[in-house]
Length: 508
Image (cartoon, rainbow, N blue to C red; front, side, top):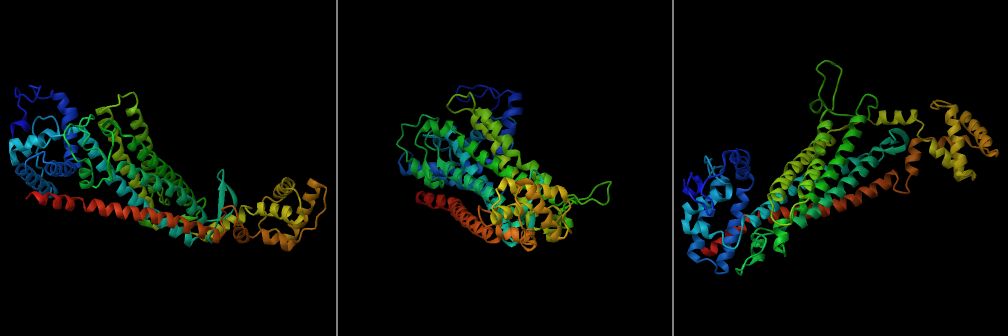
């Protein structure tokens, strides 16, 4: 192992003559090193290859030196991909980069190991790694979210005629459909997906070349490095490139909105799956039971979804707090501490997405229970008020009051002869308005039918089956656009290593 990686007591490293204090090593360097070997090193190898290729093409490094550096880089990348711990666990060090550069010097030559750092800094490297890791996290989360939306929209389309009560303030409202509910939830979820897709575009810009935040005097080609690393463009201002992590806050904001939607839907599904409603159920392999109550079937996974879905919200607050009152330059508080909240939060919300996908894919819908609930809950009374206003010219507030009085007389109207209801409604209308109407029992019976109410609600984005079908078609079109972008991005990142190999071949 090289002296640069061992850093024994008394050996000088630039202005430093002693290794880090043991407590600093225990609390900072050692845990970060363990994390960086997994999450940072593969990206550092790609960044190195792109940077060295650029230095070679700009004649900033001799061709033979470039060749040796790229050969060492390729060998290290091969070993890392094979699962080898190429840096080991030295007893003391100052982080991954210095150990990496020391190993590079051993493999290529001490001169080569140091030459690789020309016209760059750990600042622009770290900023670039953060964006590369976010690209991967967003790609994975978006892929999972698109899969959830595909399942939700298929279920919505299949249940656009499955009658179910809508609810306001947790009380039965009007006849709707399970498909209308699913389409509405999908609409909100899709907006978060589209927002995360926009964050991808913002994050996919390359900081390399910014060095420590003040740029460099060397005539580098930043666009070439950006292209080799599958970024769209370099970031124009060097200080912006290394000081900013605002895109992480926007990613967490959209992920928090997504998690909130997941949480709201999970609560609805758990409520409707309870014995109090019995609208939904799941097979045995997706529920649990009680340790004491043998009759229980607990859809506990929906509670996991709510718990994990909230992670981006806490991470967003912590990230923004970490940005506050920090000088606008490279800062460990921003680039390390505050930025460190993003990845675990995105992984948590993706876990919630995947769990919800599993439950939605396997949900057992109980249309009979939904219809029985509608019949008992008097959810068609708004349609009765509409009948009085539409067919008899009664002002809606008077119609509303008359129907409300009718419900007070018949709190359980299911089973009451429609002729009796029509006569009672005439009395209530006269009491409220002073007008004596003749209300047809046939007309009243028609609006008391939940299915007729469903089919009539075709305006204002209502749950009429054709309205839901049109909404689902529009959502699918938007989702397809996101999926197409994802495919392009996935292909571009998948081709990154091959592109680096092809560019490096020019120096063999």
